[in-house]
Length: 198
Image 1 (cartoon, one colour):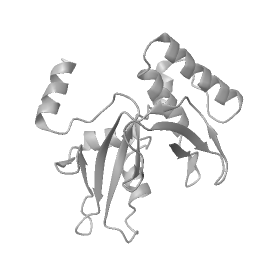
Image 2 (tube, rainbow, N blue to C red):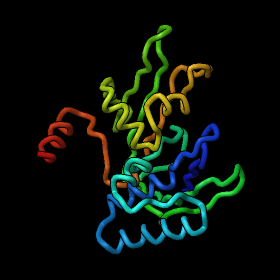
Image 3 (tube, helix red, strand yellow):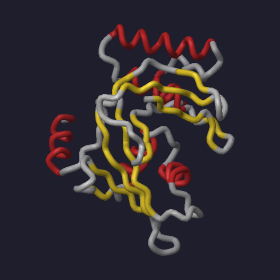
């Protein structure tokens, strides 16, 4: 399954390729996998397709916070187990593979809804099965979701997927994961993840 990532949105560099490589590096299983990801990164830098990471980890996280997943259309045929080929769109018709292929490990679901009244807030909900939906009304979690999808803010993510001037009022998306990173949905998962962090 080819997943295409834009190099720019509205004339601004997305850094999606760099952010995906950073996320893969963080979740790499051992030194050999880290080495492979570094080689892909260095080859892409030499080919002038992506920006180099600086030497400091702090700089890398400031410029290219890791992208752990990708929001895709609910109609996309992508499913758990599919192999992902990561493509960076150089132009509308040309793309380059920028990192090693990975399998889809999990799919969660996101529902975006426009404000009901003028000046109101968007609503965002998350699900594992499209039956139980967890409303996300915590700004920290919303910003984390946007950042982990490669956007600078939730406002930028919403403007890209469901702008106020679009005719659509609601949008359901697949949240495609290629690392072990997940959002806990039900209270038991949240309690378990908090317990694991302590």
